[in-house]
Length: 291
Image 1: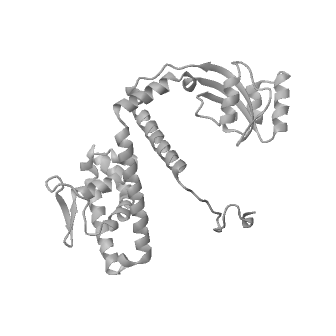
Image 2: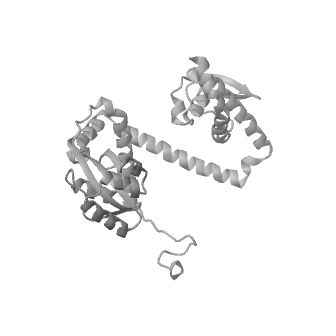
Image 3: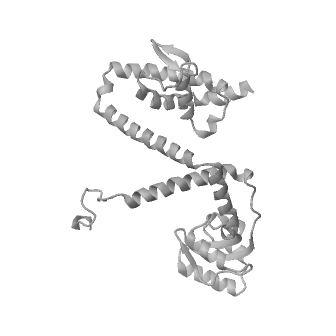
């Protein structure tokens, strides 16, 4: 198991170094906190101490798919790269870059991002409770309209005229699947236009309105326009899947509710804020220069 993980992570040493370089120069000679007993020194670099909390921070900056790997497996690579980042940071300080205007501006930007991310993390965590997750689950599973799914096929073409011609061919008895394979510019054309089952949140709004209004076995009598082009849609079937168990979709519930909490917060702040927008050249939005 260990050797397999080590072989897997070897190609990512450069990634680790880049991530650590991005994080640790901003820390200077400070470490990221924690009680002394729970935050031991794991290495020193020219007298600078590297703490367990520094390693934890470096690990937290990795792409999500690597964070679940046991720490003892990735620890050697992490500590090596934190050491490297300290050494490179020393070179920058010797060059006087700590007082460089560009560095100071980037530190301000990084501080602003960290403040924002820390606030959002705490704000969401305080509201992401068992009670709120259960309520969100009940809201979702109780909405049969949201759970309803349609199995449809479509033929996508570039113009309304082409779509109208296809509808005429289909009315005259042409086979939908064969016509989709021959005429559709969508990837699904090779499968006879088959989109499989989908819910209302998985397709363009215009497509959803049309598809969910068509009875099974029938097709659109007028073309449907989306950002992709013009569609001729045929509905094969409709179904209402059983509601999933709470535990089975807990991760999705946490993700969905987190996004909702953040979205509601930002929407409320935008509603209360005094926001003034300008054009790219700095002129007011209503300036003649914008025309």
